[in-house]
Amino acid sequence: MSYISKDEQILIKIEKYIGKFSILYSRIKDLSGDEIEDGMDGMALTQCATNLFELASRITDDELSETLSILSSGRLAKLRNIASHDYDAVDWAIAKNICAKTLSVITPAFLKECSRKLQEAKTQTKDYTKRGY
Image: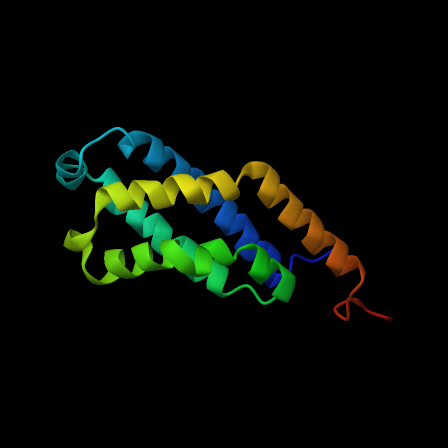
């Protein structure tokens, strides 16, 4: 029986939030800033950005952390900071651009490769949770 590492659990959550982030982006990408402000999708999208940032910053594997750095640094981090501290200051044209760039990198195939790398690293690490190691 294998275990699910903390990083694997975080990666599963990142996959979940990227899916929601993608759906929300598709809902707002053709809307004006005022239309986004009038609805709830913009607020939900910035909450997903915040969650993605927080999750990525908790990754402990150095290689995976570097791979997912687009979520924990740079423009998405700035969007997260603005959304978390002053939601009304979000420039939706910039936010939509950040979303598009993030989603162009963090694809299902990209996340699958991240998962594969974690599995590979796990086989190289001794599992001390088993009896009789």
